[in-house]
Image (cartoon, rainbow, N blue to C red):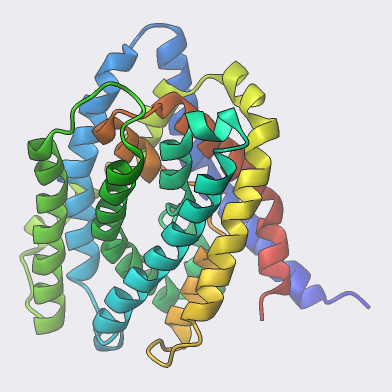
Length: 323
């Protein structure tokens, strides 16, 4: 006998998800059109993403953290320690596998830095936020945003570690000032947002609206930049060797998350968010890191599209069997 209630929920979920997917793929599609028509040169993409990383994302982080409830604020220490453990597990596991595989595969050896960066990055925002809200509820959405705010500084730290180990894919010296510009604003806004959220200070409505408006531009700008990097033909050529790696990455993420949620630090909503994040596809973060460190951003953009399409195939399964 069919579970009509669950089918009805699945139908509502898919309708809500359609709007979310439109918000993801329309900016990418516009970026592809802009590239093919030479409307916006690809060389301008780093400028768009610098604005997103240095202004829009910090504004988004501040806006999200400044409205924390006390239960979410109580997860500050568990989230910080948990993220460090998660990154350590996923980075070390994938580093070992890539280090071993590069001896047998020239493809792995050629893209080893890009693969390792993609190995510990995921789309913990946007797609996952939609899942957090639809499956866990408003508390899940806030907890997901809270988790993502801590994700960015750790992402930069472990990306720098990747470059220190494997080196740059292209001939480009590491610009320490650029790294500082990308890291400092988000850390300041994270600290400021936490201080406002925990203390309960109310900032003026006009100011919060102004900050939120900047934050809302972050994801569309980065997705548009992804479209500028995208090559459909090369994406299809990337599929055969990349799919095994994507499943390998997912297995590592699931394993690291399973170990993480055994710890007593996390409450129920946090565990639910972590479980959903374990299945996250590649996000736009690797493209930002690629721009910073001179990697092959076109390869990363193509990989992100493939990973997202695979993720879309399992979204109904995640929702239908979630308990």
